[in-house]
Length: 159
Length: 190
Ligand SMILES: [Zn+2]
Figure 1 (cartoon, chains in turn blue, brown):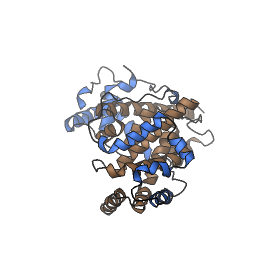
Figure 2 (figure 1 turned 45 degrees about the horizontal axis):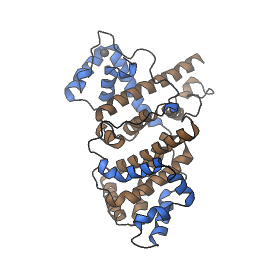
Figure 3 (figure 1 turned 90 degrees about the vertical axis):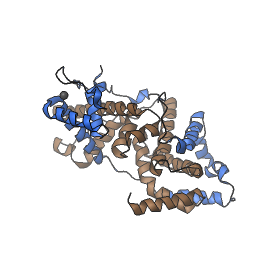
Figure 4 (figure 1 turned 135 degrees about the vertical axis):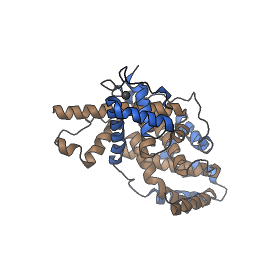
């Protein structure tokens, strides 16, 4: 078993997210109080969560509300029934080139248009994003065993 | 968002759905920072993030007449932004084979150990570590830790089962902790 698939890690991660059944939560917390491995892992996961508050808080270079409103007004002045043809007028040729060069872009647009119906409905179980291999510079397997020793019980029943 | 802002937002959405650009501009102002940061952290490029943020809002404008409040408006915007970012990264991958990672060490060599983890620098280290994760791990971490979405919302947004969100988050955290531990190790050795 790979370290990152360790059932303990999955259960502890879900515990930190408060996405675990109440009973399983109590059992896991009680265990973590006595098991040094799980206790340390839980502390580390909580510290990591707190760390996200330190991420750089960057802002857009300019007010997009103004820019987008101006573009929409330029479009609206062309006529009231023109929203369906918005794309043709909205994007300057350069931007349209960027947006529409390939099937991928068209797919993204189509996905965007379907969003309202997709959200909160049952996700497709077969859907799987292709992994962007070249971005995985590091092998994401953690050094050092995350898996518990035999004395540390499995947490498969936590959810 | 407090109750007053939520009421404002609902009003702006209704007006924007009827084609009011100034109402839509108000929605853009309300959400631009959140959408921009999300895209920036996904793509790693300010310039690209500016462009994709604009594109995302324009796509939202086009899709808005058919939008129904089954999910929070902000979550819907994040889904549009995520798809736009993913599409760009896929294309970049094909065209340049360039990793998102900027090649910089996670920690800058100059400051001493005490300053390194202080304030801003900690965030920079985390930011760089995130960039070394695969997209699928980076996005679930951002959606959970920064956007504070539930597993159900994340599953719907990226189109996978909830169990996948759960295990992917655990993998992502293990990988991120390994990177950060590695950095801490470098620091102690240096
Ligand atoms: Zn244990």
